[in-house]
Image (cartoon, rainbow, N blue to C red; front, side, top):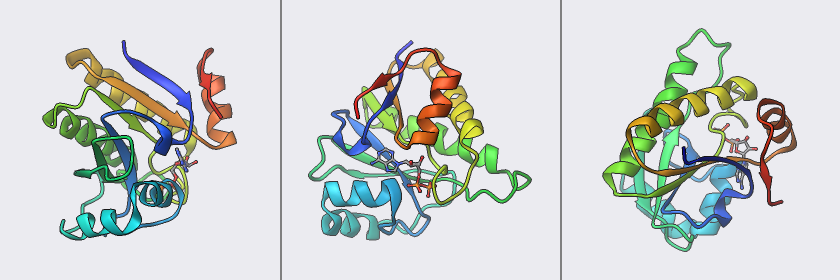
Length: 171
Ligand code: ADP
């Protein structure tokens, strides 16, 4: 089943589409969002995002990839962690599902996800990693796509190592 867990900078990947852990206003932020905007060309990407009227938590929208090595960027705002009793898990699951379905709609054969919501949005990393894998695995039962799940920081890498015996480390 084509799901690869890798340690990398998502902006360096050559895939059809990368997913941005966006905010609902679709404005350039920090973390992975800032890195994606900088690598794609912040002005051009911001202009494209401003043409879209925001995006709700758990939904997904698409722009071109501009200067990235990808055709597209899918922007999905994950939930802000509020203790777990506010549908955060369901919303995070929706972010993955809607992104995968949008990628399929655009005929993408490969996609890379960061660990959505696990930075400033505070979603517990181990739970977030498990949700990501559950959503991606159920999608891959029905559809053909190469999916990379990208871990970046030390804590995420540590958790993924604990959960999986083999991981390709590039940085
Ligand atoms: P959110 O606002 O959804 O929490 P963040 O960007 O703060 O988004 O963090 C989401 C995850 O992205 C974090 O686990 C962070 O370590 C990771 N991340 C940050 N920069 C990159 C990058 N260049 N490539 C891949 N993952 C990254």
